[in-house]
Structures are given as structure tokens and as C-alpha cells.
Length: 165
Ligand code: OFO
Image 1 (spheres, rainbow, N blue to C red):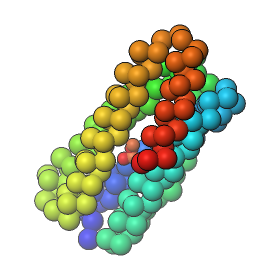
Image 2: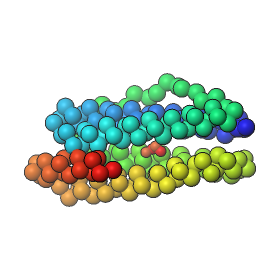
Image 3: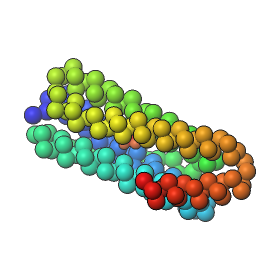
Image 4: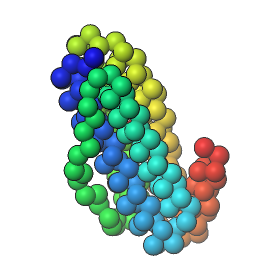
């Protein structure tokens, strides 16, 4: 059985994961209309992954005697000043999600809810991977700068990243 504070915290995380999915979907759309198919495909996949993160939490809350709440979401940014700006936002967002997961882990220990603590370890590992990936992409984008040819190659490479993951 979940304590009220754990149930509320998990529900907050459900909203954050849902918002993450929307943020990446908006990024996918922007990349797609700008003609970068590879980046768009990558963002569509990220959006799907975030929805899976949300669903995993929803099932956990409901299975442990709580009630997962599906709430209103903040509208994401739909345009970006550059691809660099977009990937910087992605990176910052992942750092924010990691902080939120860490806070949840902290609360689960305070509440002595070891089942939730155990469940959250998957998210801790996932965030390490996602932050590392976002950082790698951002490094590449910084190397490219304003070079159009570089951006073309990056778009092709990121497609490979999507195919292989
Ligand atoms: Fe990438 O945020 Fe979910 O966990």
C-alpha cells in the first residue's frame, strides 16, 4: 500500500513523464518541418520512450493500491531558435527529470517504502543513460556550429543511433 505522500509524489512524476513525451513530440514536429528526418525520428522515439516511462509509473501506482491521476499538461515549446537551442533544452530537461527522480528516491527512503525505492532504481539507471546521450548529442551539435554540411551528416548519424537503440 502506498502512503499518501508517495502516491502524490509518484503522480507528480507521472505528469512530468507525460510532459516530457509532449516536449519531445513537439521537437520531433519542428525537426520534421525543418526537413531533418533523422532528428525527427530520434525525437519521435524519445517521445514514445517517455510515454512508456509514464505508463510504467501508472501501472505501479494502481497495482500498489493507489490511483494514478492523468492530469492536464503544460503546453511545450513548439518552435526553437536553432537545433542547438533545441538540444540544449532536451539536455536541461533530462537534468530536471533526474533531479525529480532523485527527490522521489529520497522521499521513498524517508517513508521507508522499500518497494517503491526498488522500483525507482530502473529510473535512476535510465536517467544516467539519457543524460549521457543528451550530453553526447550536444557535444556533436557544438562541434558542428553553423556548418550546414555538418548538420546534414549529423541528421544521418542520429538516424543510425535511432536504428541501433
Ligand atoms: Fe527521460 O525522462 Fe523519463 O524517466
